[in-house]
Image (cartoon, rainbow, N blue to C red; front, top):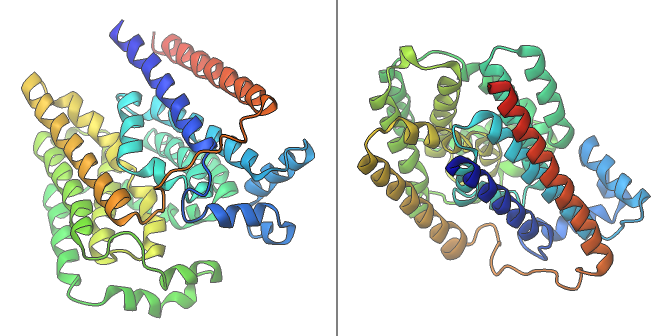
Length: 361
């Protein structure tokens, strides 16, 4: 009964997340750029084929207002993210909450195209952990329809499969700390000629934290989480899924130490930053004592609160706040369309959850 209640609560939470994202106005530093590009056929050409196809399809149906683009992409991101967590996570509801409060959801209000690819990246990791390489490539191909940056992640995915000894994780972090004595961003810029032109701009861009309190917070929490996992587990007994996400967490830590605030590296790290969303429910499940579970929940909650305050309220790097909502767009026609979307969303989630139960039984 408790599990069913959690599932219902998760679905309600997902619907609220969809509404919050779908009707935003001037929220995020990329909002105005998306609006202008959607309304310009020439500028639209720089988008990937999946995003262009979505815009053309909406225009064909007569939904030319850019708000419809945000409605559909919000539904797309929230729904497929729930599906990915249902497949991967020990608790998809906890993972969905972490997806929000660890910042990924709010990042998705800006980098819409990349977060349309993230759920399929997670599904690709699921099949990679099961060594189903054809399906892995299939979902990576879907990712590339929404954001071509996924091609830069493929080598990292191969590295994430490598078995490491426990001391290797600490050695990598210490080595990264030593390298921080050098200007790694300048070294990265020196090889920028090897990158596509569209990504060279990001090398000149600073974002997020730099070497600030926020930068320390963003690195310390993953390190603590990694140490906890290593202490609690014998890596020889861990499955490939746990190994992959633990290694992705290591990549996130090392890149955060070496290139704090570099926008290009952040574009890559956002794929890796999803690792705690999967690892935290695993650690929580492994804790047997109720007191330890409570301490761990408080620890994670305090980090989420600290990160949210520093990133979104104090620094407000993503320009998420003040949040504004498009009440004028809520006409009867739009409400009818949203009602259909929500009904389809609920039915699809229900059918998917029922199919999972049948498979497991």
